[in-house]
Image (cartoon, rainbow over all chains, first blue to last red):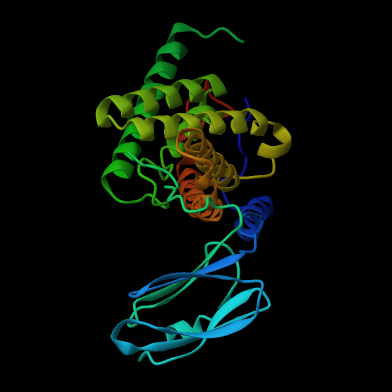
Amino acid sequence: MILLPHHKLTRYDVLVLILIALLIPLSGILLFRHSGSVCVVTCPAGEVRYSLSENRTFTVEGDGELCLIITIADGAVSVTSSDCPDGICVRTGSISRTGESIVCVPAKTVIAIEGASTDKGVDRADFIIG
Amino acid sequence: MRTLSSDNKISRLTADALFVATALIFSYVEAVFPLSPLPLPGFRAGLANIAILGACFRHSLWDGAAVSLCRIVLQFLLFANPTSFLFSLGGGVCVLLLLFLLKRPCFTRRCSFIGVSVLCAAAHNLGQILAGCLLLSTAVLAYLPALFAASLFYGTLSGILLNLLAPAILPNKKSNSKPNQ
């Protein structure tokens, strides 16, 4: 009969806990590493795609005449300045990986990164539950 | 396998039945309260592992497997959630595989129930994610970091509980497989 002689925390337990705790960022890094290739700016006026490979700066007019100045540089996109009251979009910093996004709620504008592997022009559901 | 007297068989059977009932209650709590760490419907927090580990270490891995299987089937009959049935099945299979590997003196001599619980919770959640991959799509793998965080939390919780309950659940070395009262 194999019994567990310890009914209290042992140092090997802590080792196991640390191991599992290390797996959290490790699995995150392994999964989310791909860089995007295209950024999609969605605002009330419509949706525009910009390639991340060329550096450019442009202005987007969001809802309620709030203007966001967006810069694409070195494969990353960021909001350099914005008229919105909270400025969260500016503070989000730059994004470059597929799936990341910058959202400006007052201006109802979203900047999202899409990778090269997504289907062109087809709206694919990730998965259907239920 | 050593032969058991009829007394031992009956006590083993009733203990296993109690473990199944306990595991079922945990499943019920998981189904009713929004304890699920991931926004997937049918994903379970894995608290029933407490009863499975209790049965496994009190009796044998076969008892653990039987308790696990009974719990999964009864949970499906009671709550009729097909996704959660398949998730729990995948999770249960992974837990049993892990327990098969872990029930060795070199491991049990060094760790308490907390280490075993955390690893079993990780295996349970991993099994659920793998079942989700087969059923839904490979996109569920994006939940891996949240999965490990959840298994850390629920595994430690289960492990602390088992450490406290161990004198009552596990058999004594001296007497004829009767735990301390």
